[in-house]
Image 1 (cartoon, helix red, strand yellow):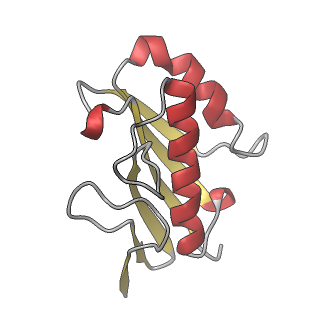
Image 2 (cartoon, rainbow, N blue to C red):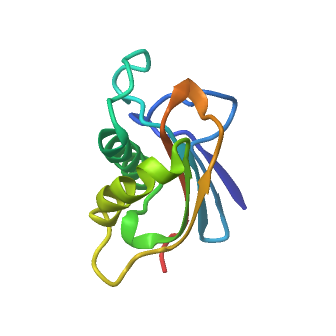
Length: 130
């Protein structure tokens, strides 16, 4: 059974997609942007550190609304528009959201652009109830 989840209080999607889809205990979380969930029109935070914090906080909102948390994350995919400049500072913030020794598998990709001219977007794969 598939569940197509729109999470109350999470940022409004910037395109036609669900915040997450649950399938057989797996939770596929759509890439989150550094948007303010309380004000879609607010400017994005300045700098990669602030944008990474906002993205991770948005992911936490989606996970919580789907009945999971960051401890359930098994894989992350990170997209950066300025890979060489932002890789290390993004990692410094990202690492702080996970318990030591419990970092999910991950891919990090340099891209030419993201919606709203964001510097970072992150999507997740999590396992609920396991």
